Image (cartoon, rainbow, N blue to C red; front, side, top):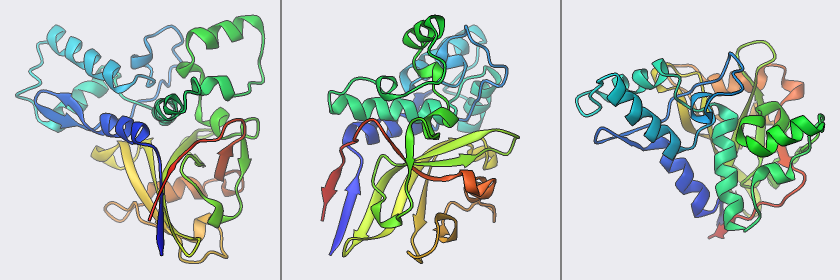
Length: 261
């Protein structure tokens, strides 16, 4: 019998919000933007850390300022306008907002409560308290301070993370698992979401799926289905410094999920 493990509705709704930003009478998928300049004092929506409501508001404001007609523009033109204004989401900002929505259902507070940091000086702690989302990156969220390595593919569950790499040196990336399909207690596939700079015009928030074709082999040896024009950048990211990548599970909190047959 097939069993479905799936993230709570609040988390799925947050993903849907990122993938369907209401702009100019259209549903626009949030593009990717990363704060390469490491700007510290900017609004979180302008450094890749905004939630969907922040993003929609900022785009509408800039559209008025720049006399950009969102209703006449195509979806691609709207996304390009957003990128020209540094409006989008990086991978960690996207995942943090989903996990915060997930934890809210459990009445467990925000994710930052459960993360450990190497720097705990007073100034740094105050900065984290004031700007929690802005101070959580992919390396921190998937690193050994805050996660355990998951070796057994059959133990994969919603809320698990995949630590990966970007195309640039020392750039980390992460994916969030939101659905797992099991048959006779063996994992047959799982689905994930992430915000990626790759996949050309379809960069930004995306969904992907992995089929488990050999449970006795590693994560990289399974069937990764997020292929576009013959390219699978997500798998390439996993293979980049593979020994440092893979499945991770947050140490300090249990994420509840739904089970359906």
